[in-house]
Length: 358
Image (cartoon, rainbow, N blue to C red; front, top):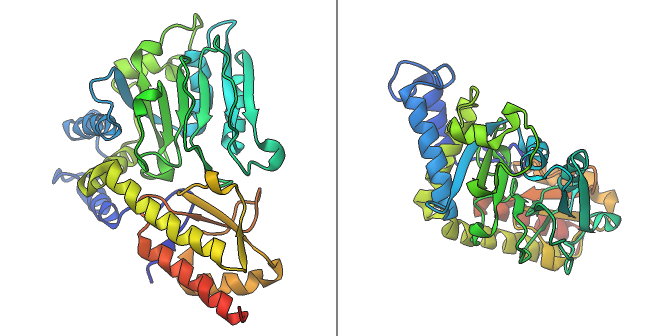
């Protein structure tokens, strides 16, 4: 039975992406070679890289606006280090918004480079809301935020107006909603949350903000070197980049981010409405900050955990166990999750309610 995959990452992918990537593992572009064994310098893969970089900019509405798209090795956690290396001036400082575990990890890395100002944090309340009404120092070299917090299930709905370069970790909601992406000077996102398998990270950066730190940057951590080499400074993660391209092609064919946003809103409304309606469940975060990507909820009576777990597993649902930091359940509804899968979870919750005579 095909599972209803709510895993927080590696994520669910579209069925057609599985089929095309599986075929490419056996024979890529009728070359007689697998995508897993072709040279990254081959004409076929260079074309993949060029299209992937161009399509990322196109989907974000940033083509021709001075941005470069890169597909770099490792996960988004390496960007916690690369961002201050490339943007924080010697003797300078950076501003960070602390909204979750990954934001906190980014702050820890930045502190090794210079003064790091945390403009606001919801850590004391276990990250159950997005801080608002904070002030970004005008002399900061950049401001860093995390758009969506996978573990705790919150999402930034608006972003501050500032003249300070804005950096955003969009690992878990990239390509999921319409916004003015030109308000950001640097965006990064690990592929495994909403694009493809683990192993590559998309970085979109406004080129004019680079080269101003006054510090020596190791070559592998230098965005300018990766731009100059067109994401080929070292051997790239060929298969994850190819799968990410297939996913972006699928998204474009569906109507782009605007069409995807409508689907995501419908999925989120279906599940959150049931969480709020059903007396056996409750959400964990401020309603105005709820994430459409990661819905986190708890049982009102934890003694029923084994019973509910048996029901959702029997329905073919996978991956909704909550993160240890929160407990309960986490339903990750990334772009490729169909609304039919959300309905299956909602039906299980309704049936669970009936069993308890509500």
